[in-house]
Image (tube, rainbow over all chains, first blue to last red; front, side):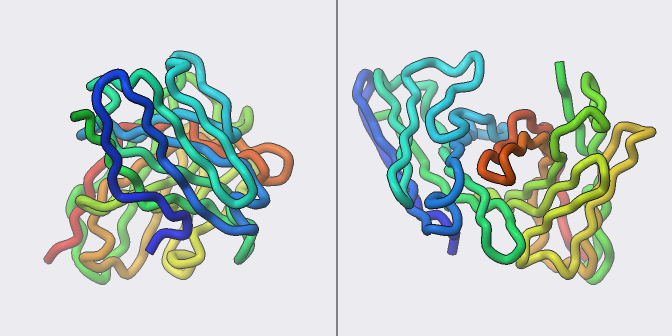
Length: 111
Length: 123
């Protein structure tokens, strides 16, 4: 059972806009910034969005993040086949002396 | 270009200690950032294990804290993970990563990852 809650799966057709939600609590998302990681099949995770809505250099602007209260979301517009991957949200949690918590991950399928 | 590379035994016996090292190139550990470990059991999601600052300050996952030690060797530009009393549940791909931390821990994200190393716990 992950501390942050994500839907296990999501899907869309090429060109569509897809959103993935991430729900937490006051000790994590409610208090700290949210990050998103993309894990393509058979590869290491890659930082996709940091500090709620910032994109690292090289990440297309089709990817965007937002946060409100104790929830966050990742939006992917103009869906492409290469976006098929697992997506994880994460944040620092202030409880128990502090630690990082992840969502369970969302598998995105491009139909 | 910052690169991280995990190394260590791919097979560990139950009840023994898992030991992994992450070698950092292209950046000096002493210059800043936190350095951490994350694992992923087969077919499952990511689990944060812990992280360390070059000064030696550490943070651990509360669920693993009693078995985990993370240390740093700035002279070799490496940091290491030790996980004791392993069981089959510790079988996973283990990743090392660089973590940016700011304003307390308001900002904490892992911006550079190693490729990962598979560790199997079996007799």
